[in-house]
Length: 259
Ligand SMILES: C[S@@+](CC[C@H](N)C(=O)[O-])C[C@H]1O[C@@H](n2cnc3c(N)ncnc32)[C@H](O)[C@@H]1O
Image 1: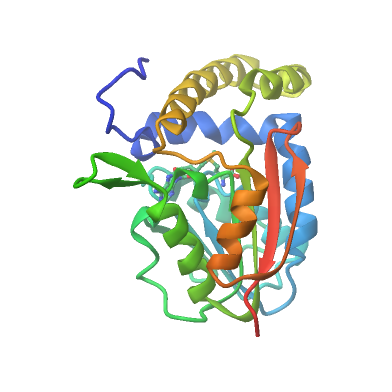
Image 2: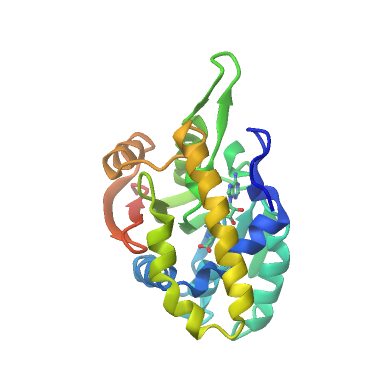
């Protein structure tokens, strides 16, 4: 696999990239992040949730399991159509097994906002290491901008009900993928499919170098915590808090729509 293609290729839409990240959940740093995120989501009976950039649906699973199947619904969205299969498989493995209406998948490119959802639709939104990949290129200025990143924060606020919460993780500036991989070594010894685990870990590292390269030229956004906090304030969020997680390679944020 080569990831040195024309600068505007977005591998996130590609089935191979989507599948490479399906194994991420076996990495101890990811398990740490999942535990921290689940703690801050605290989903309860009857709530409607959105999982932005759902990948294989680990956070969708956490919402279901943590509420003991009592959340009203989870809409899992991702730009990669391949993740539809992952969510279908996930649905079959959940207890109690939800209907396709209660745990659903929609292919959405959040760089263009969330037009499929009306104002105030959700009680909570979760997003794991995803919104940093919102991309916008300004043709007139010939450069990548943070317009889509700012846009997805504003859209998250719009589709939350007043008082609703947004829990999301993003990578720290210049993330150390090797540090994540190093902390992931125990996962290699625990997995039942070590070869698949190793192959996907290598793929993740290679996609990781593409992601860092694109972040360096402003297409993707590994921002300092203060910058993210300021953007959340500008988007109209309040009660903003954050912590570090994922072997110190990610920030986890929680913020509320005033209401
Ligand atoms: C690092 S993976 C995280 C997946 C999942 N949230 C998890 O915690 O395992 C990033 C995810 O963001 C999705 N993504 C990237 N850019 C996107 C976009 N513009 N619109 C929707 N999803 C996007 C990718 O397809 C991928 O599934």
